[in-house]
Amino acid sequence: MKISSLFYSGAIAAIIGSSQIATVAAPKVKLQQVYENLVVERPVLVAVPPDGTKRQFLVEQTGKIKIMPGDEKGSDTTVFLDLSDRKMAEKDFEEGLLGLAFHPKFKENGKFYVSYSQQGPKRTRISEFKALDGNVADLSSERILMEIQQPEWNHNSGNLLFNPKDGFLYICVGDGGFKNGIFMLPQKLTRWNGKVLRIDVDGKSPGLAYGIPKDNPFVDTPNACPEIYAFGFRNPWGSWIDPDTGLFWLADVGQDLWEEIDLVEKGGNYGWEYREGTHEQTFRKSLMELLLRKADPPRGTEFIDPVHEYSHADGLSITGGFVYRGKKIPALQGYYIYGDWKYGTVWGLKIDEKTKKVIENVVLFKAKDNAEEKFNWTAFGADKNGEVLMMSWDGRIFRMTDAK
Ligand SMILES: [Ca+2]
Image 1 (cartoon, rainbow, N blue to C red):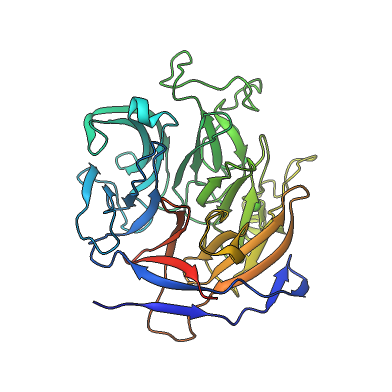
Image 2 (cartoon, rainbow, N blue to C red):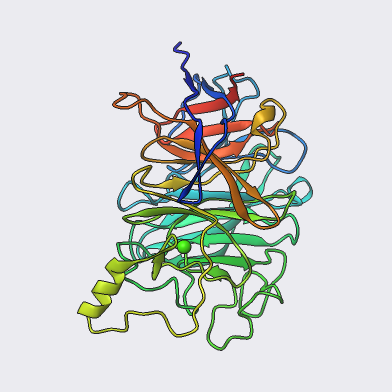
């Protein structure tokens, strides 16, 4: 059995914003491969249900949700849900089973929510299921809440999360795909694409399988989809609401130049497809001019800038994580952990939670240059004890540990 232990300690310079340089010592961490005896196919998420059982559920993009063994050396998983026969992918890359969230009262009602791709027509389905006995889902219990059109195979997003403060389900939806925001959906309030949606899974508004929260920001806007909570996103990947601070962290995958981290606020416009990070998206502008269409945003449009961005010199596709509040790595306390799917770099971001300004951004792990071993991070999740589990798309799972 191969034990892979990786260590990175070279981070001294931290970039604050995109211009100032400060010198701070990064928390020293190492990565240790764990659960090596598990057969894992394209892991995209690890989730711990709010039922006190401390079980860890692993979501595979290819359609299964598995309960991981309690022992890291174990090889037995329980298949909790199997949707692998649902013909999810046209192009085997970004489509599939992409989201899982447990109902806040999962312990009592056994309900949980998934998002997965469907074809003919291409769409993302948001469904509710019930667990039979906690360990197996009842396939026949499926209740389809929404089906969201997806013009293309890419940028589906599909992150699902419950906000512990309001109990509503938040659904992240990508921009419809292809390139340059060419479908121009994220800025249209008449469409679900490029949005964060918010629904009440316990309610039912007329004609809908769910309720519309009364204080959703666009319920009184004529023709707007009342589910919309925030808009202007490209492809959110790795969204998380901090139960301690209520901050809603969303990593939005960029196109050609900038990857970004947003703090989502009700009604906010996060810029895509006019902006990529804090920058004007000139590809779209040129395209619109070529088509003799209006290139500039409507007068008075206000965009909310990301709390942090990095350029494609440092990575190509952001994967969001969570703020570490575990016990085993004291120096990592309060850092938001995130990384890059293509380059494999992992960072820790610290912000002032009041001003929402970046205090530090430090490299926690960097793959060696020209290394044969690649790390394609798809998820950074808190395990049953709040410690960091990292998923690589090739099926490997790593634990972040203290290297001090
Ligand atoms: Ca943005």
